Image 1 (tube, helix red, strand yellow):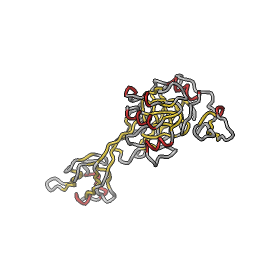
Image 2: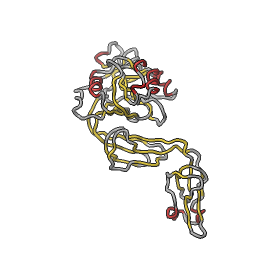
Image 3: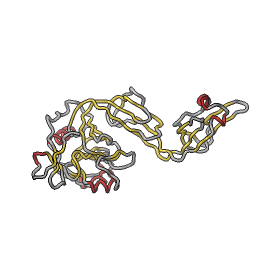
Image 4: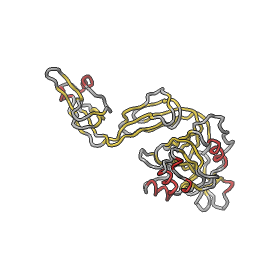
Length: 315
């Protein structure tokens, strides 16, 4: 867990059914849509090659629509002939999601639309059905675990000091669209209130495990999980329970407040889109220790007690 300015490569995994993707080599900004698509349900199989009287290999020549295109009920999918035409039509409103090796057309209704946005400014270095990768230069802080969808917004302080808990009373709709920096702890009430107020995401030293279960369900795990649902986005920097931020982490956060930032859930990183000279990286980050009450993580110099579990400062 440390601050570093450098060139980062960020992968954005895509759900199944991407209809549009930004091509490789294109310059994008954080928050720009780099892929979009829809969640599909039951597939309707339409005779394609057999219906229009061509071989499966020749079906592409007579197609009127392409895979991942939206179609209306009765739309012509493929057609041959003029006076005695033969055509395959869509039985429903939906999307052409696939063409089988036998030349059949798979149509499925779209129940939900999704969009994936870039979390950094940079250049698209990979773009395929599985992932869109963007490479660019920025500040980054590695955390321990992140939950919810990726978030982009202005970085703002929501506490007065690194040991303060994030108080729900300090959250309101005026903070909409921002990524808030808490201190040592963010309770479930603070997380849910921030999400209700339209806050883009919350970053803090730790969150109680019980509070995470309240927000994300009983199947939540310690490694974090990215989602495409409308859920709160949180980044735990040090651990679970309570963990005051060391000065080497807190002071750059103060200096970078007001800059554009993003939480990338899959890698549990906070990216701050600021120039290299905007703040100085700390010379070193202290080792971390789990206090003997197992309730908090602290810099090792602050931990007292015979039973102290040392944690690696980087992961």
